[in-house]
Length: 230
Image (cartoon, rainbow, N blue to C red; front, side):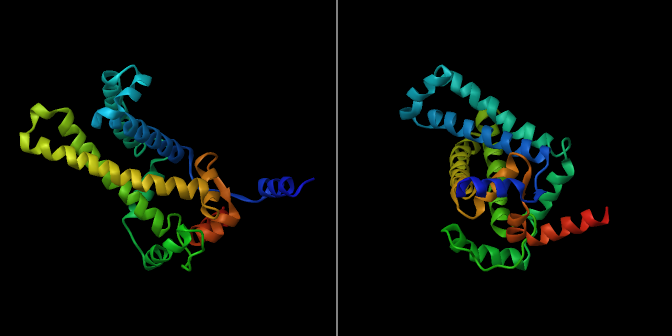
């Protein structure tokens, strides 16, 4: 048996811990797929040079309809996850990302080193570390301003002309901000040698106990203590 095969076998047999529920995973992937569909169709709407690519949808007019449909999914479906499908976990996430502790800020300061392949020196983190909280805040505020500006653009006759003019740059800048955050998020989740161990959590829900202890020790210990009390 080769070394790679042995390594994969050991990894598959290593203890796992549930990090994300089914509801959390659905919310994540619906949001992500809607976001990239909005981005792709939005490029065709924003810049005529991208319009020939919109032929994959049947032309720019169809792309506009898809853009609006994806916008509804982006807002409504994800919003529903706060009332159905493990809503307590969604509210827990929303509450936690607005609460920064000293440990979170220490993680943020050490994060650049870890981003470029090293290992930052920071104290034990909770379920969401400082970097993840900042990414979440960018997502929350970006989605908020994209949604508000999008409504104004979609229903322009209902709003003052000055507000409509402002809606366009707000919409575009919010999207650019979220694209930058998404690229960093994808790099860390797929390519980064240390943090990509978190990716299985968004498919199966489970991550290795080793990863949880190393990156989210406070949360890991809390879960272990809760399980021991059952």
